[in-house]
Image (cartoon, rainbow, N blue to C red; front, side, top):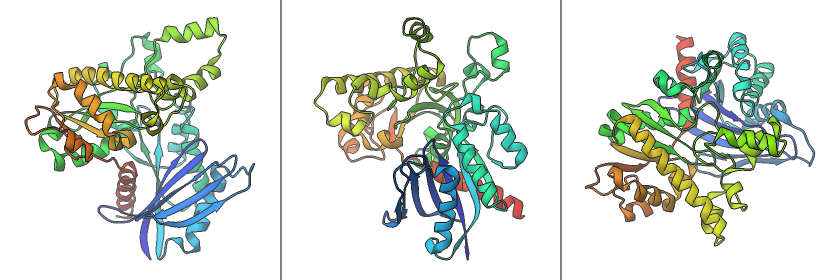
Length: 396
């Protein structure tokens, strides 16, 4: 039996999973997800080539939950799906590690209790991440589990970049700029030396553009500044999240529209962003194909905010050697990349239109002072590598 590593990313109503063959580097075996965990669950798994190797649908109003999803996943894998492989460790994407966890960590009761304390800092994500961990602990208690944090990569930022101009007592209770998408940025930092050694050693801005979107300034492969801060709703406008917002708007909505915290939460996280501005969709593909002027306005705002944040991050770096696009939009939406690069001409970005249309990897002209790249991210591989390293260390 060959060893394999399970990677899990638990959301509010979904459970995404990948399985990697234990090795250096880990090799992908299969991936899939269970969605609609509390309404009408649906499971699909695909092999590394993309072929469907498992699928199941449950009746409407079935409440499978994270526990039931984990139980089904292990039952399915033991039924022959892994074909001679055994799961020896599980790695989890955990949104928030606070200031305490700056590296991936083996999960034990003390660590789990500490992670529970961060739920108020990420109430829409952290509880679901921890639910998957607890489900495995209850059903397969002997399986080693590793937590990998979206905040850890940004702990190299200087203190001033993590601070808000609020009374000091709030910073002391954890109200700071944490930054997110850290596993994606960590992956880009790990492969950039092979793609562009000058950028890896120098000043680079990475734009992780997807349904959730953020940007990170990296100097020598270390985070210096980021657009997301205390929560994953700050920074760029996203699929349904508003991005940066004047706090006075919240006071106005509370006073004039009688919105409480939960109503504001729904507005900011679920009803805003590209969906809110366009009134059409949160999906970039839909908006790019739409003739509706509201779709164009949403795209204009998205590109405008990227340009403004790029200037800010370049200032934080004191210059710029490279711009990297990643994430679903960053990797696939050539028109968005083109518009961002056009707006960044003042920084020294000169777009190669043919290379951009072809998807890169290099999409800037040879004479461009700032090199632009398209590099697909792989957060799952980062988690598998961390889980493997910690598990191998224990075996030794």
